[in-house]
Image 1 (spheres, rainbow, N blue to C red):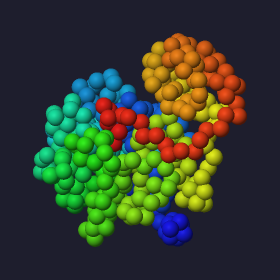
Image 2 (cartoon, one colour):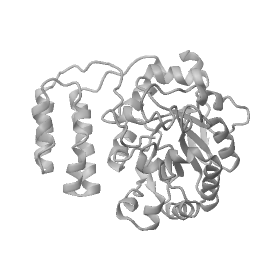
Image 3 (tube, helix red, strand yellow):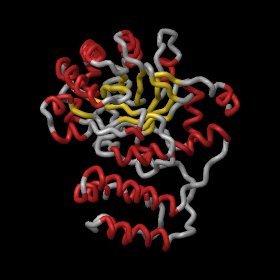
Image 4 (cartoon, one colour):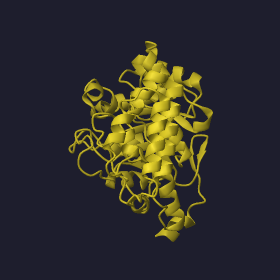
Length: 356
C-alpha cells in the first residue's frame, strides 16, 4: 500500500495556476481558530495550503472591522486562500472584488458551515437546499474575480438530499478549480462518522477534472493513508485535528514517506509552539485581545500532561506576555523528560463553530 502511494508521488496537484505537491495537506478554514497566528504554526509544521476564517460578504461590503481584519494574509503563508460566504449573488460578487485587492492565491466559497446563524439564513450549508442558487452564486464569484475559485461544501442538507455528485459537476461547469467535501450532511453537524464514500465516487467520475479534497475525521497518519488509497482523493483537508496539534501535517507526510511514525512532540516542542502562537497573537491583535484569544488554545497544547490544572489556570488568568512566558518556561522545566503517549489525535468538539 505504501509503495503504491510513493510510486505516484511525482504528480503535482494544480488549482488553476497554483502548483501544490502531490497529495497536499490543507488546513481547513475554522471560525475563531484559523487566524494568522494559528496559520503560522501550521505552516511551520507542514500545511501545504491554508485558508482564512470564513468572511461574511455582507460584512466586507459594510466595511465591518472584524471582517476586514480577516483579510490579513502574509507572504510566509503562501499559498493561502481567503474564504467568503453569503447567499446573495451581488454581495458575493462585490466581496470577491474586495478580496481580489488583497492578493491571495485563491478565493474559496463556503457552502458547508452548518450552524443555524449561517445555514438558516440561506448561506453556508443552507445553500445546499437550492442547487440552482448555489450555481448562480458560484458563477457570480467566478466572473467577478481573476483568482482561482474553489468551493468547500458537504454531502447535502440531510440523508434524503445527498446531492454532492450533481453539485460537483455543476460547479465544475461554471468554472471552479477545486472542490473540498466534508463527509457529513448539514443535519449531522459534526456528529457520527464522516462518510467518504460519495467523495470517492466524485473523484472517480470521469467527468470530473478538478482536484477533489476530502475532509472529516482524519485523526492519524494511518487513516490519512488508508483514505487516500481507498477513495483516491487528490489531498486531505484537516481541521479539528490541527487544533493544539499542528504537528499532524508533518506526521502524516513522514508516515507516507517512510511508513514510520515521528516521535510525539516533547514538552519543549509544545511549549515552543504555544509561545510562538502567543507572540504572533499579541503582534497581530494587540496585547489585550491577543492574550485573551490565546487562552482557548493552552488546554489543547498541554493535553495529556498530568496535574497541569494549576499551570493552565495561570495561563488563562495572567495578563502580560512576560508572565505567561514565565509560566511556559516553568512547565518546560517541571515536565522535562515527560513521555507523551502516541495515540490518535483528538478531534476537538467544535460543533458550535464552522471547521470546514
